[in-house]
Image 1: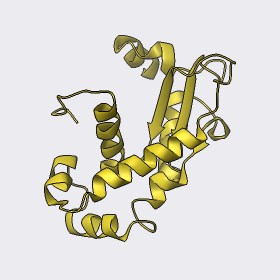
Image 2 (image 1 turned 90 degrees about the horizontal axis):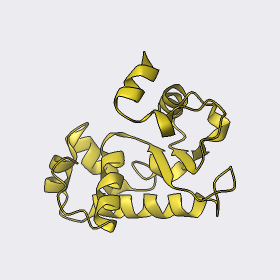
Image 3 (image 1 turned 180 degrees about the vertical axis):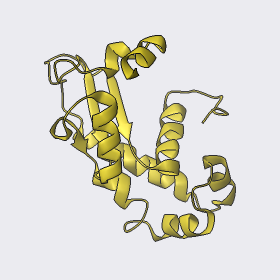
Image 4 (image 1 turned 30 degrees about the vertical axis):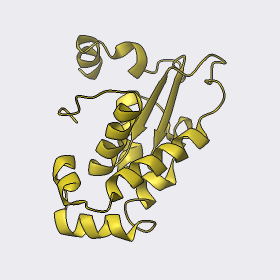
Length: 147
């Protein structure tokens, strides 16, 4: 059923992992068990083929008391609500640092020796949305209503 859904959405070419390595793909995740379980189940791959990025988890709590305060206040709210409540730029700072940590982990080439063309990131609620928003801004995407 999952394979059919991925094919219908046009995602099967870079999500299904018959050979453990999809050309040009790099997979990163928070080391939190739920994130790794989601990645391994969705991609049909073992966790050892996923690069853990501790900051995606730590940056939401231990390494960012300001983010922790926002989380305590807002809980599992939308990114828009976090941005409206964030007068200090905590969300953007988290996203920028998370992207920096991702870049530091990116190998010079994909596992198949080719160029990395796709980076999949598994993370937590508003933190993952913040990373997506920052990546969109870096790519010059102006319309971020969907994020």
